[in-house]
Image (cartoon, rainbow, N blue to C red; front, side):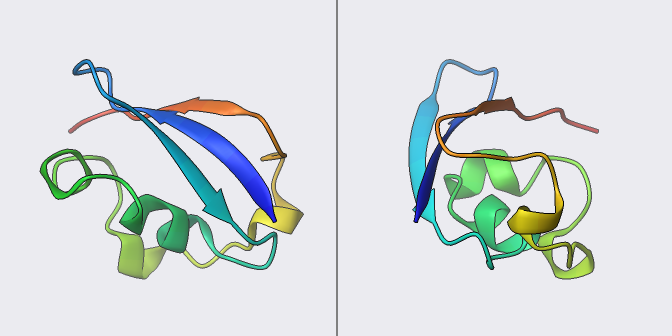
Length: 66
């Protein structure tokens, strides 16, 4: 189990706990709906497991919007 901090750049930070086998799309689904619906690539198109990326326990990620 890993924990990452997601910053939506609109004043909200969310601590998300997930497994290393979860995909980036799964992680994105943990973000509040208001932010996730406007951010980047749709979660259904992101299939990379976190263990194959450079996302590790305790990292802080910032979301960018289209």
